[in-house]
Length: 163
Image (cartoon, rainbow, N blue to C red; front, side):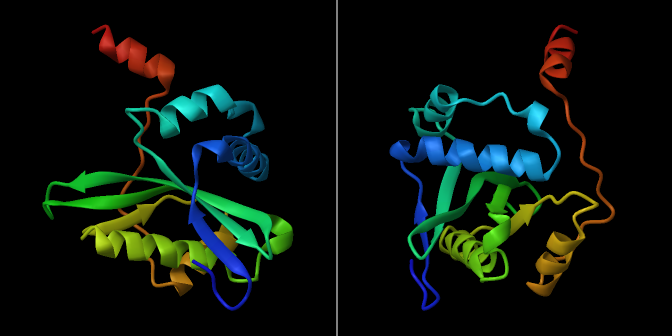
């Protein structure tokens, strides 16, 4: 997909793993979570492009320059009875923000969600990330203030699985 502003969005391919990992590291740095990144190219190749791959990825380019990425997957709403599209991460390089790249990525994903007849398109945002919160609200997204995200990390998963 290309628009008049020189933005191209395309599905990522196996050969793009190095670029995806570089964007993951940039995102982690932006979110002050650099130490949390344990992914490497081999792991991403296996988990994103192997036979049991669940996540999908998009790459955004601005005037042929890598500009950002998104990783998403499908979940399911029992109440609606339909799949949903969950946006795990979206990132645009700071120097390229404000050019409509992030908006085009979300439009692209919304079109995928529409084509797949998804009942929801959801994502999470850090509470301190006011620019992103404002951006998402301007697109018509609504915060789910009455929900709290819970997480088990790898150690928590192991501990619970032993009970």
